[in-house]
Structures are given as C-alpha cells and as structure tokens.
Image 1: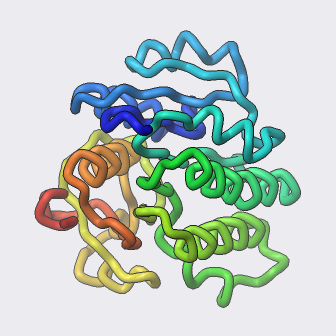
Image 2: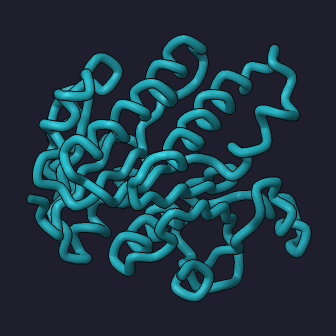
Length: 228
C-alpha cells in the first residue's frame, strides 16, 4: 500500500531534482532521491530528501519496483546528459520505460516525467545525423510509452533551461512552441529550472494535469492559473 506523502525522484542529483526536492519537502512530502554516485549523497540529503544509491542504467524492473515500494508518486528527472547516443538511449528511453513498468508493478499510480517542449515533434523534423537527434528520439519514445500506460502521468515540457530564479509564472505552449510567438525577445522559449521545480510541486501537490502533457516557457501567468 502506498503512502500518500512519499515521492521518489529518479535522477536525484540532477539540477532540477535538487531544486524540486526541498520544495516537495516543504509541501509535506517525504522524498527519496535515487542517485548513481554515492559521493552525491550528502548534497542530496541537504535538500531534505533521503538519498538512495541505485544506478537506473543497469537496474532491472524488479530492482526499481523495490525502490518505489510504498511510494505515492515517481518523478523522472534523470538524463544521460547527451554526447553518447548509446547511453542516451539506455537512460532517457530504456531506463525510463523500466521505471514506468516498475511504478505499475509497485502499485504507484502517479508519475511525473520531465521531458522537453518539442519532444512530440522534433523527431519528425530533425536531421537524423544531428547530434541532438538521439536525445529527441529517446524522449519521444519514452513519452509515448508513458501515454500508453495506465499511470496517472504528467509529462512536463520546458523550453531551453536556464539558471534564472523561479518567477512562478509561465506560458503554456503547444507541442511546436507556437505560443511563444506572443512573447518578444530571445528568452521567449526559455524556462528556468526552478520554474520547472515549481511546476513539479504544483502538479503533485494540487493533483493537476493528470494524464496531460504540459509544454511551457517562462511567462506571465501564475503557475496555479496556467495549469489546472
């Protein structure tokens, strides 16, 4: 049986995860963060999350399900970091799919995927020889697999990530980023990582955007108004 307040973050040492964990803790959740490198445990613990060492690239579904046991929600915020197509596929696609299967196996229904704003369309427009294509392909297939599960998922698609502090305000866009045309300037398709963390907190704390994909950039609408 799941605990209503336990959340497991996959990719717990990532920049978004390190920002999201304390926000979730402040909202009353008990957070466990999966990390590959035990040297990162102290930094993760400082966020209020409990670090759990598990390499998702090699962990099978059963091991992941064991890590998710008793959780109410899983947040996937891991990534290979680019540069190695084989590892990108292994982490961003194959390991992601195993976490979805593991969540179902462990009885966890709520699942939040951190993706990117054009994951639905880039695979159809990018040159397959592009260095970005393996990442786009991996995220596209992982997101589509998630949509085919029975999980209460939310797929979050931020734009180009920045280190700006959270404004708490966003612009929800379509799969191709068309809504960005209503903004002016080079930052129109950017999203601060801390705003992503705030959106993660919002959709989990408020039960928002269940079985929805939400693509968004930094904007002018308060998160609570933009995502219901």
